[in-house]
Amino acid sequence: MKTFGASAPLKELQQKFGFEPERIVGGGERAAGEKVARNSMSSTIENGQSSPLGATLCADAVNFSVFSKNATGMELLLFDNATDSKPRVVTLDPVKNRTYHYWHVSVPGLKPGQLYGY
Image (cartoon, rainbow, N blue to C red; front, side, top):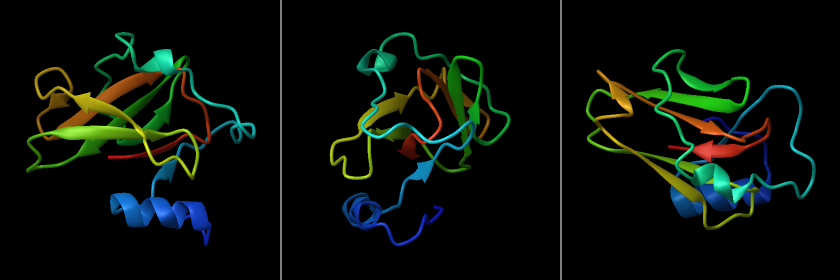
């Protein structure tokens, strides 16, 4: 995973979850204290596309795609901020969210600056 400097809160997440979350980049950073609407974890989550890999900003959502030849399951973790100890978990369905070795999902309502990990 990418490292974003010596931020103490990010290092805490790395120690707790075993990785340092990545940040969606794009039109700017999330405003201080701004959170993603909890309803974005509802049934409005789409299957997504296998290409391109990584997190891709789309019109109203972010498409996530990751390659794993041997994974039998995949979860996307969404952190509201660098000190969030309870991420929102999106469990990917191997039938709907996998194309060959590519796991993918589209999550509406996310903005640049969102912290995430797989």
